[in-house]
Length: 91
Length: 176
Image (spheres, chains in turn red, green):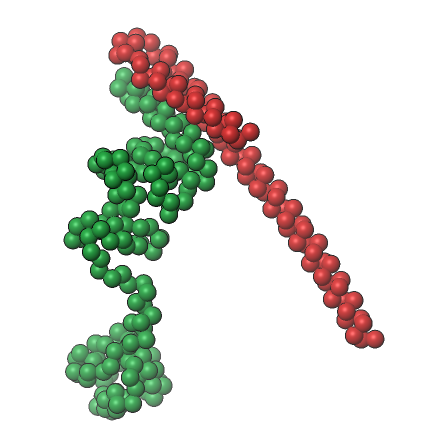
């Protein structure tokens, strides 16, 4: 999924750069719309990139929470084990 | 502010014969006279009264790791306590290693407005494939948007995105 995103962003960026470089001065003066359309596309791609980053951070967060939950369970088990050992010693 | 009486000076002169390190003399002095002077004050006193106290060799040895030996031209230096590697190109002139190597790999001379980015985020990977030249706008844009990642393809796609944005802005700027 990430690779597809990266490739899409890369390809679109290169195409748009070529388009803008091939614009003549007259075209730039006459029609502002081409550049504005490119700007809108750029904002759209920025949203995709930001979403990609958010997804990554959410994944990272969920992995960390599961890790902390597992640690918590492990610590509880160890406490119970220690309590049992103490009881044995007291007997 | 400490007042240097004759007793104190005599004490320092006696300590000179007992201790080999200035830091030991300092500690002993502070104990004896219930003072809290520093090595800097002791250094000033040493020159003022010409006591010729021994050096604080332990401190010098410990700090030596942080001190850089003067390098020959072409030698590497780590600067600014951030582990960034620089190369000496002239008597008092250093350049970041990535800029130096990029110029050698590609046979170009980098301008001040041109920057080098590490594609995989590893600032110790100076291979040719990992170094990419970008403009000032792209460099700041990458930092502002937190686009630097540990994946080469991802970083490259974002660099192209920033170049696209720069292109748009320059065209709109021309029209204005």
